[in-house]
Length: 395
Image (cartoon, rainbow, N blue to C red; front, side):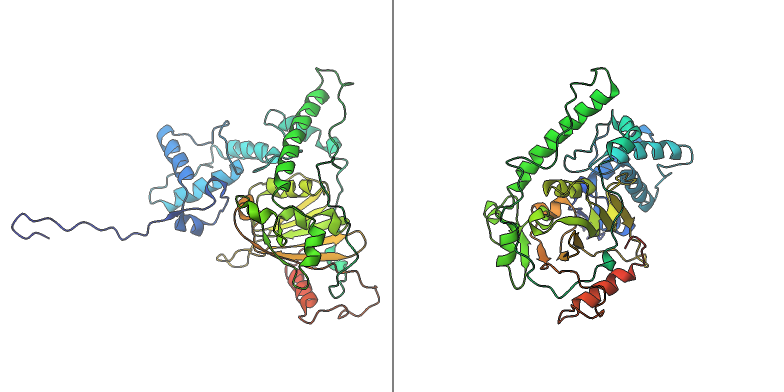
């Protein structure tokens, strides 16, 4: 507004909402356009600017990512489409095949977040896939039907083992066999050397992560009666590592709580490599896992012991936010865990989460009534109804 006397003009105010940066940063693998409308992703914006300057339509082969290549490609296309002059998608007709091959090659062998004994370097991933049928013969196949297991009213269960599973004095996870009998020039030798390096990295991680939750989980669980509610330890808060009611994800899988046969993991966001590291830390490698997820950072899973199902909400505005697991033991008993955390490292690392870990629920005789073993809150009935609502053959 002019005042005729050369006064200052009113500033031009921009009322557009300023988007905050996504908390997950480069580890974000959301694919919902609404998420990208609400939050900024500077690393993706930088990539888009790079594409616009260079005219490239594929991700560079040496680009280091914290999620799968296919996920990044889809995210970039979403952001492009949200812009007024978005231009062509990365996966154009001309380059779609090339992008698909690149993403698939990486996803099969990429484990995001933490070392995994099964992870191979990019130079050996193709050889690993060719020999996967032989190398993974020790893994268990199939997943037991968890709904066939009847559960009684939650009781304290049998006395837990007094010895806490630990990697300090050795591990049940055997290292690769001695390769001295394999010629240095052979394909088998190179593969064994890569496996040994991956195992060494994994063992270092296991030893470090064990420090986050000290003490016997079995004793902690008994002390938590009758509510059995815990909070997660915080990596940067050393005091929480010794607290009597602080636990971590690998504690839930600890062998002292039962001889695990298989497990069901239901969650929204999943970092697959991190999840596998929790099973390895708890010495549960190769146990069958059924994984129901909303969003995950790895596609084209080729793990014979993992059955992964992407849950699609019936509404385009919905999401699969359940966070729980069911642990089935070899004696027929089960244990249910309901918590507040996604299966991602950042949620369990430095964010306080709540965890309810049920007592052991022994199996009921086959001829018992369907209402037998019910709790005062009808938890058994509600849980079975909820699992049935998925209408999935995997359950």
